[in-house]
Amino acid sequence: MAPLRQCRSCFFDDGPRSEIREGDLADIRRKYVIHPLVGMRSPSEFECAPDGGASEVAIYEAYLEAGFRGGIPFLIGEVSFFFGFCPSQLISLTWRTLMAIQVL
Image (cartoon, rainbow, N blue to C red; front, side, top):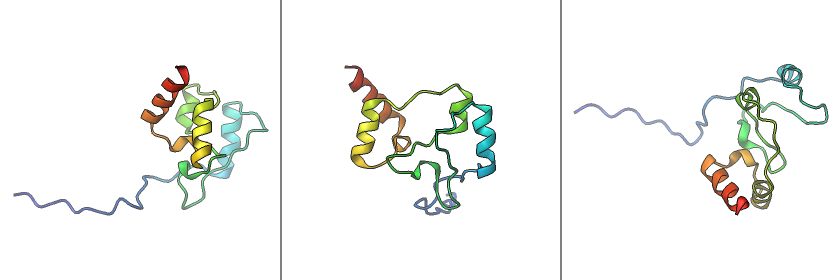
């Protein structure tokens, strides 16, 4: 029988931290033509991107490269605000379900 792989605690392991720093934000703003009134910040050393509150949305650069420029749909914003977390903390199945409810 093969030995069991050592299991490490996943409680604190959220994956890799953001490599974007404050200086990179200006480059991203210029590259994707983001309006100056849109507030941007990079996560702190011990913060993951989706750890923001209800007033923040984590946007990954891959979304910007794919052309994402839309706002947060009304129902998703309201549900996120009600429960006190940012919309980027919702999993994709939740987004699809809320979007289906909103369309109905």
